[in-house]
Length: 201
Image 1 (tube, rainbow, N blue to C red):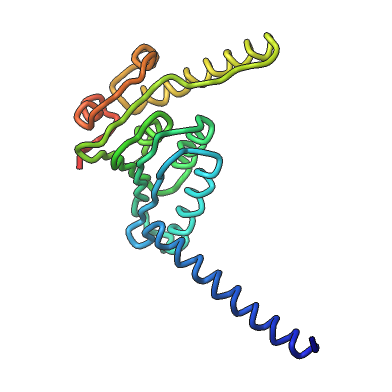
Image 2 (spheres, rainbow, N blue to C red):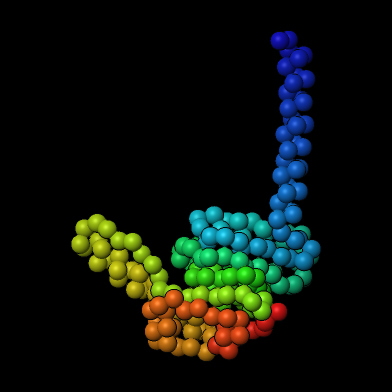
């Protein structure tokens, strides 16, 4: 293959890569609505959820003027997941200069329920949504001392989460500890009653 052919191939590949990047960006913009400031939290809360949320929120905020304080709308339909990721998302919502409305559509279980309750704007659930809270889960193994240390850590995490929930709802930390000893299932009406959400939509 001649040098000229290499250059043509290289240029063609560059155009192809640019087109693919443009297509990828278009797919990303369809995954959330920049104009209406809508971001989706769908499926498991895992090691990529915070990164995904931050990327989308930053894209929305960068598209705005500096004085635009329109809330971000976080639509939730999730079974929950990682407690560390959950707490990081709560911290991130609190760090933003604009409110984050949380909206349950379908389900918000476990970690997702805590995120729903900790919205910094208005908190909503659709009429037939289901919300569920429970104790922090852990699968422990290893040396006895390590297991004891892990149990202590999980207990501290549980105390922190119960305090967060008490600050957002009508229940005290002790009440949250008691009711989460088994899975605590709520309809939208019950969630509204104890102020996990502010409105049913």
